[in-house]
Length: 210
Figure (cartoon, helix red, strand yellow):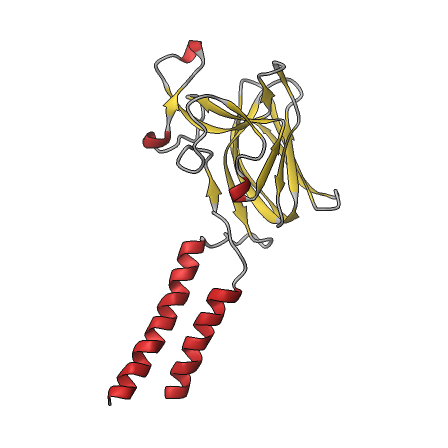
C-alpha cells in the first residue's frame, strides 16, 4: 500500500512539471482579460500573453453585438448614434484609420489549435473565415450572414476573416485541442494534480503514525 501511495504522489508531481502549457479556453476581448481602456483600438500584440497576434484587426465596443458580455465587462458604445448604450466587446475587420473593410488575420504564437467563433454581421454583410496551418495550407472555412457559432478542427496556425463590402465581427473566440476537446484552464489542471499529490502525502503520513 505504501508503495502505491508513493507512486501516486510521484506521478502527481511529474504531472505538474511535465504537463504542456495551456491557455484560456475562451477569449471575450474585455478589459478583464487585457485592459485596453474605453476606446475602440487597433490590435497587434496586446494579447501576446494569450498567444495571439493580430493584423488589420481592431477591438470594437458595440451594443448591437448579439452575444452580450457580462454587464460588468460592458463599456459605453462610442458611436455617437449609439449614445447612451452599453456595448459588448469583440474584434472586427473594419479599419477606422482608412475607413474601409480589410482582411483581418489572427495568428497563434508557438502553438496550433482548433477554433470555435461566435460571429455576427451588419445588415447583409457576409462573414467569411478561412483557417490555415503553419505552412499556409488551407484547413477549412465557413461563411454566413446575420450571426452564428461555427468551428473548424485541425492544427490551425492562423485564420483570416473578412467581408467583401463592410464590417463583420467575432464576439468570442474559443480555443480547442485539435480533436475539438476544450483545452483545460491552467489553474484547474494544476489544482487537480496538487490535490492528488497531497492525498498521497496524507496517506504516507497516516501509515507512518500507525
